[in-house]
Length: 154
Image (cartoon, rainbow, N blue to C red):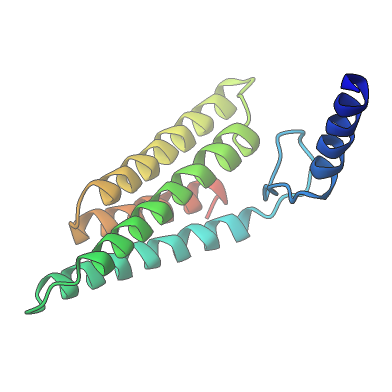
């Protein structure tokens, strides 16, 4: 009886793992070789626009006579989620996959500039999570544009 129960439990567990949805990631660390660097920059810029809009909505809701705290919390969470996504793209995609380790002095110099620029984007994304200071969004935008120019040699 116990063996039948254990077998049934094992089959049910196996069956459930086969039909349960699994989370899908946009990119891997295999590396797969399928890259769209310009798309990643575009996504970062969209996240920055969303961060700015979220800040605006938080400011707007905070001035209302009847403060809607739930909406403020939702916009705050939205702002922080998009700032985190900027950090994830910059680290998981660019830092770990696309910015290669330098082997000669010229390559190392360029990589140092890219790393400093990448770090700057991540720091300003963190500052956007921490505050409602629009200057931080402007700095995040400028740092992203600086990284883009360095990365694409514009």
